[in-house]
Image (cartoon, rainbow, N blue to C red; front, side, top):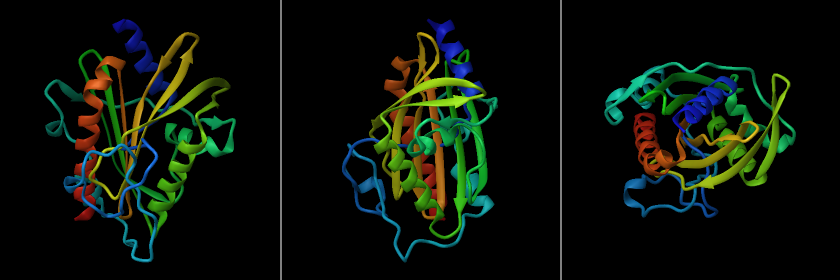
Length: 242
């Protein structure tokens, strides 16, 4: 089983470049701009529609560095690593492209800050996180497109380097703490009979976006994902608020 999981992890990181904090879970939407510390556990993504008061100033390099996870933020046993990046994916449905856009390449209109990767054990579990910033309402626009893709894509096919892979999309409960966040599990058929399930969170605070990926044995995912995603989201949001 471990061999299969390690192969799945290696395949995921070789054929994809998911790197972030956050994605979608549930149907309802919470009020914008509230700190999750005072709200009950959510069963839905937190969302905030862009307004005229939306911050127009991009995050600084220092803020983006402070927003990313460090080893001291993780349970014992984790270590730093660097994932292998591959070519981009093209979805067979245009409305799903925002989901596979996270598998590699730059984000249009964004400035990338911290980009960190961690592993634990014999590569049994992996974390990747990227912090981005946008000008004006770019961050809110990006997250809105991502949320729309989640709602419209339950199953689709994506092609990378001539290889087609079936992808299923399952909403998850998003962590609290940022202005808006979405969580999702992507079931990626990397080989016949082999499906890996990276769990992704995309969170926004002001003009910043954090993208978080957690990939592990499904049994471990159920136990650890929520806590790790919450830690990542809260740290990102705090740094982005300044």
